[in-house]
Length: 412
Image (tube, rainbow, N blue to C red; front, side, top):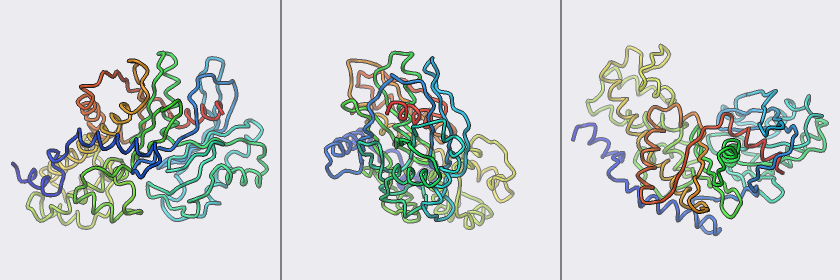
């Protein structure tokens, strides 16, 4: 065992301590408890959206409040059941950098839709945060994740508040459908699945945060996978959790998603600073770094030189960069295994109709831009499902959250 491998073991990153099959059982059990409204780390929130491919020809407004960006625009379905997105604006998600009042959030949306107020009567609002959906398709924000700071919105009915701000801005007689981004991602898969005669669908997101959705008893459920807590925490997980905006919440998301993989790597490197693996200049540089983006490590791993990336500064030599790449690779491998367990559990627990193939619509910049992450997920998924007679296919639908939100609005 090398010195680095012994440090992986010391800080809980050794893959040998993880039993994938036990974690799979734990995840499925938590899903079932959530469905039964029993105490569970997985919320299993009913979207009250029944999947349908009978879409009417019309234009709807679409809002996508994601982990990083807020997108607002219009979507039109044509005669060929294709969705055309237009007139979109994109801004940084409000509340990322500093705490704000809810009015600022709602007014920003109203301002951007005002000039189109006569072009739509329905709104599909993809909201990427834990939200309890009600049969009228409105949703109550339970709490924020992904470090968003708009605390007074918690407990609000988002659709009701948005319609109130619409009215104040002379945007009247609109119907709002609130849905989670993984539900929207699942729905977007219908644009592909219809052509392939698919009957089973799953949505999976791995970006700033992570989540999944599936169809159970003909209704789409938002699993809120990021809340799963029946997995072995490493010392790094515990330290990162203490430093996060909401300690104790969404431990699984903090172990696998793009908002945190960089931070986990940084914490590990700072812990091994006195173990003689890195140069003195690298150790010194690490002491003054307080935040590390996952994208910086991906850049390093792919050896894409960027003079603004600290790892390409004179503080880090070739051997330092090699060690850091190995650390990042280990954290990515663990994230891939955990993500595969999420997907496998969702596949197994979804309703199955014979041996029909399942379409997994997978979305998220972290999933596709982090080196080897998606490859490791697929390899782990094959191993987890080796004894299951289940066929599945991954697809990536462009602009999945807004496409799915448009379908939800049109179907309401």
